[in-house]
Image (cartoon, rainbow, N blue to C red; front, side, top):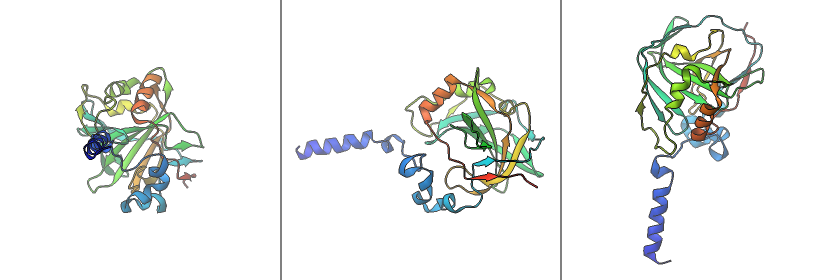
Length: 245
């Protein structure tokens, strides 16, 4: 191969590489970028392997809290995009979660498959995280289990808006329909509470978790469409949370 041909091949490989299309990932869920190696990928990720309050968890005999204090807006709008590891819906509007008299605003939600949290070693098909933040930069997350069923109910319009396969990362598109995040929650407000961490790097601790006890449904088709774009993206459980006294 002469020098001109070699140069052409090198340029072609560069153009076809995932990084050149915006597909480079800073972490993954298998192989040498998987959860076991997150701390090695970046110095900021050291907590992923050394922290004491890591999430997700497996709930043992955990006390159930019956009341959830949320103020969600039926006219909520959002932008949907592929962020490299997940499909994220960025929220516009005022949607409030109150925990221990502290106010947290809903910023975004996303999905994991399979579920990250478990209840007495039982997992679910998917898990949705509604991520909130407070004025002082603290995080609170409502987690909702999803299991296969006849329909995706209130989540169906979200799944219909999934970015096309192969689309570059972080290209945001406004959702066509307004929604009320309250409709994403199960009818029962019973939930588990615990203090944990982000389930993705940098695995920051001090996150207030609210994990809904009852699941909602996701259709086979919608789950298949999500998996076709994202694949497996769940961190394994880090510890068991026993009964709170």
